[in-house]
Image (cartoon, rainbow, N blue to C red; front, side):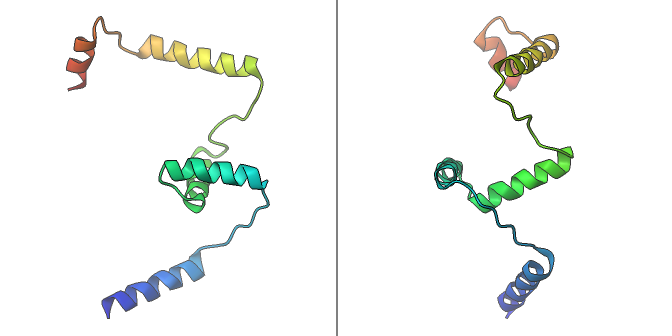
Length: 101
């Protein structure tokens, strides 16, 4: 009986609080994306929900889309600079692993 009530509550939540999104997308892109997501243990619906949540958290796209190699290199260089300025350097793997523990 408890399971019936849980199922009913879940069904009601889905019907009242959830909405449906329909998109048109290139078939090859969908297949390739689905294959990649499955390797990561995700389905399309979950990945899209994650994407929407990140947009909400960041109040914008969670990445800056570009094919401009100069922009990509500048972004990469800036991230490397932050890592070098704020990161810790190790003289050996042993030192690194002792710091992890």
